[in-house]
Length: 311
Image (cartoon, rainbow, N blue to C red; front, side, top):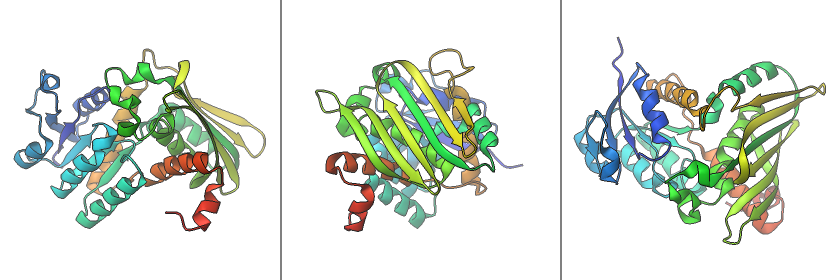
């Protein structure tokens, strides 16, 4: 019988509770340690707690880590784990920007250690039904809406509202999850237009981003100032029929859908570590973020920039 993977969770902010709950119910994984820079967050866990992730990596036998630290620390923490030979599941986005994400993917390939980005919405049960309904059908257009009031979702994790630490606003934070669903439903897609609305502090609060894929179009709608919450995906099939997935339907309570989604994340990560699942470094989502911001700034099609040699 295969032994459970020994897993540590690094970063005990608002998302960590979903990973910890999923780990409790995952027979193929065992929580071995937790780590957070705030000692108060370590209390109450049934495993050793650490405030220094490097010391934890050196002193604790681990097969894998789950990284849920702020985005600006992803590069350092993930690189340290990869260099110690621990497989990494990192909360989206993979890194603060495309360059950092590229560096991490190269390191993972050099070390031959799994690097997996957690796009939890792809494991939503409604999304699964939508994919099954669309299987084998020609698709004309996909629309993904990711609308929320970020202050409610961030809770005490104020770094979400710091553009230097988050990597941007709604495009950097919610964009990767929304784009991943486009990619899941259509395959490779590229940004062709980006309308972004910023607040007085320069933070992007709304965005309307258009994409193209082979034979289809897509639209990503983001809002950090929405009165309530809406997370859904619509697919218009070539015959004119529209099918939809409401990712929040049937899940009572705030963030109620995340419990089963993060169980799906860990199941996929475990298969990745065992060598039976895909290694997804999340670079395409970082490319989406980069291209949306570049297009907003330049006003030119991203394809035109690439043609001029942009990196």
